[in-house]
Length: 353
Image (tube, rainbow, N blue to C red; front, side, top):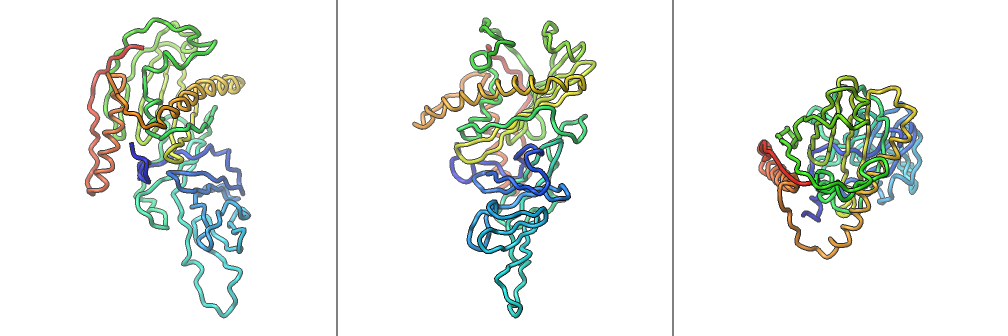
């Protein structure tokens, strides 16, 4: 497991915050891959992301003043535009011939898509943002307009992003970790599950399959309810449950904050307008499930502090192995300047849960 500066995969989009966390004229400090990031939104509602450090004396820009157009550092008043260009140095006098525009704070590509703010983590250490034409598309849920999710929650897990990912894709922990009064109050006997997994451009997918018709929640979606679960690197799990009348999509995105902290964002989108009054209930249920995973990550961190050898045994852990293989291949392809080749192959996995 990588603990140094390369613990986060580069050249990917990362979900940083829900859009409503950054109102017009406001900023929000965050961290991504152990780098200080300042998210902001202009008065015109455009989002941006800068390295949260003034290049003059190193004061974090988050302590400065943002008027909706420029950020003024609190130490000496240097001002910066949302693209990172310095626009003014108050201490300069008229006869000092200096182009302040030569000074730049590193800007990161930043987009707001379907109610969430994403930041692209490029390779290299240049100050400028990568060429927009060379960037991949921001992850998007097909079939939904560019609107905010009905439910969105975020939590910090005290673990490396790889352990957060392993927990996210682990099919065997549900029986032991996730219980609530409305769902699986008592443990049932373990049963064999068998699912087909297939390759996707940036990960893999559990092939669409039928869900139990007796579940009352599924009946809200109509008849012939099926599900499909996709895991795309660097840490994006999307589950679409679809009936012949409605669909629900849950998105869980992992954002590496530091080598020992991961921010987990969970969003729910649905096509049932009459569910609007139940958003609070849905939020509570989602928070309950995510907090159970957070509690387990906290307990796990105690054991991992002693750096024990770990064993990934059986088909239930194959996806964790795929994650490691994918990461190695992605990094090697970038280092060698060659096209990436997804190492995941179509396979049927079997486990008991």
